[in-house]
Structures are given as structure tokens and as C-alpha cells.
Image (cartoon, rainbow, N blue to C red):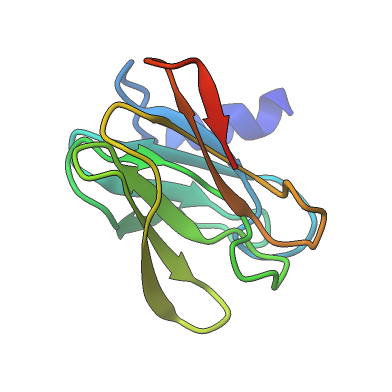
Length: 136
């Protein structure tokens, strides 16, 4: 693992404090790919385990929060963000190559993604600090 980390840093993957690392498998090979999301530019930087090059992908808007997951159940991580200003989720589904938007939560909620019902697909969830309540 340290060898790969040195390789990633050698290709200048952003490492600012404002960059958010995500645990993902974009190529569907069962191995974690290195990826970060920079909210200040809404840019994803991905180093897939099966490729020898960095992929940059502009998806989302400045200030969005990454909510990675396999939203369409195809075994690959989909690009996804939660927009806190509108409590809207934006998901680029890798299987269908289509964008879906979903309003879930309220302004001020904290988004979480996970397979909450065990069906193999990522589900929506938010935590509302004002009431200390989870919505799944």
C-alpha cells in the first residue's frame, strides 16, 4: 500500500485539507480505487486499480458533499453528491449512464450513504442535528 500511495502523490493528486477522500470501486474489480473529491471545484480525482492513469471528472457544484456508493447495483461506484443548500442528491449512474436527482432531507441535514436494506444498492439517509434524528 505505501508504494501505491507514493505513486498517487507523484501524479499530483490534490491533497489540500479541503479535499475529501472517498472509499470507492469505480471499475468494479472488487478493489478499492484511490479517489478524492474537491468541494471547492466540484472535481473528482480517481486512480482506478485497473488503469495506469488519473481520471478527473467534474461533477456537482461548489460546496457539494460526496456521497459515494453503488446506487444502481452494478458493482461499480457511482459519482454522487448531496447539495446541502437544497437537500438534493445528484447521482450519475454508471450502469445507465444517466443522471438522477432526488430531494431527500432538509437544509442543515448531514448526508450518509449505505446499503441500509441489504439489496445491494446504496440508499439515502440523513441525520438531522437540530432534532438528533436519523431519516433512512
